[in-house]
Length: 291
Image (tube, rainbow, N blue to C red; front, side, top):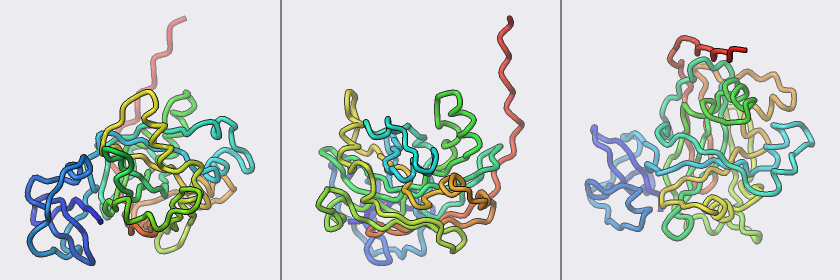
């Protein structure tokens, strides 16, 4: 089943996607309600997808983004080099649930950034008893802001705070079980293009841990909730421009007008256009401690 949240006729609905249409649940029912274990029956005639604006599939309580692809870490750190700590346990950071955008929304460049980038990922959504479903996750990244803040041994924060695409819908876990390999990973083809030119591709099954282990780690010593989103982290083999830059590529960062399209087998396609962001005054430097 594919569950969507969408705007049609000025009203936000949740519904089931079938073919090229979406059929609404009763008013007031959200995808998060269903993820939490609720039930509802869609009714009324399907609305063509071409007539709706797809919103993020759900409003999650929390969003964690892991770094689960060894090839991505190798490309970002140094060719042939992966920190030994990466192998010891999954690593993640929390990102901003309020900054989620829909599958076809425009993406403004964050204030002050000159090195804007995408990240091709898949996200799992937790249910009451495990993983409820999966969606595509684009972790938009201001690399220059991210680099500065991580030199202080914190972050990423503002470098990842402006936008995250989630969509086009939430595919329930049972739909993707046929793709599971003998090691417990989902063998899904992942591809990203910029302005129609393919930049990267990988298999989701190249993760270092399956999503079930990421979910267990997220819950270790704390509490997770139904609806929490767990990003896989960027795939390897060109899952972001920064990987290419790490290998010596001079490819330009994203600019206004660039169209980034991501397709994941069994889930669907998201397509966002980069637009100019808000120009703000420079950040005031800190006052140095008197000596």
